Length: 52
Image 1 (cartoon, one colour):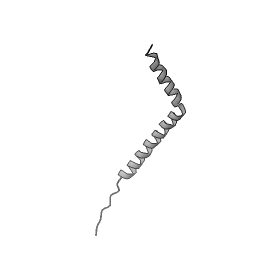
Image 2: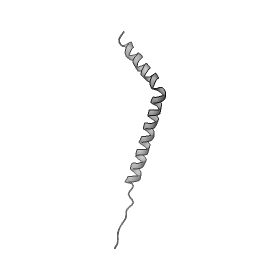
Image 3: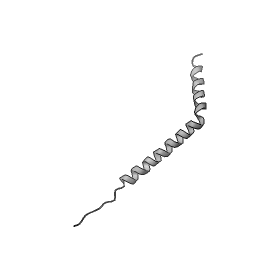
Image 4: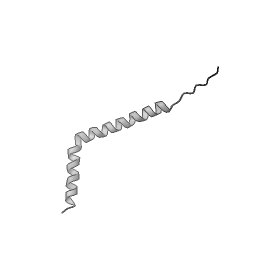
């Protein structure tokens, strides 16, 4: 019986794409944890400046 087996690159490609997205999201979350209060205060101050 002759069976052709083709190597699929879909699984490794999907795994590396998922890993890259996970790293980006992890870095964004880390940045939010470290600077979230400053970001929130800056947004609140700029929002309040439009009221006066």
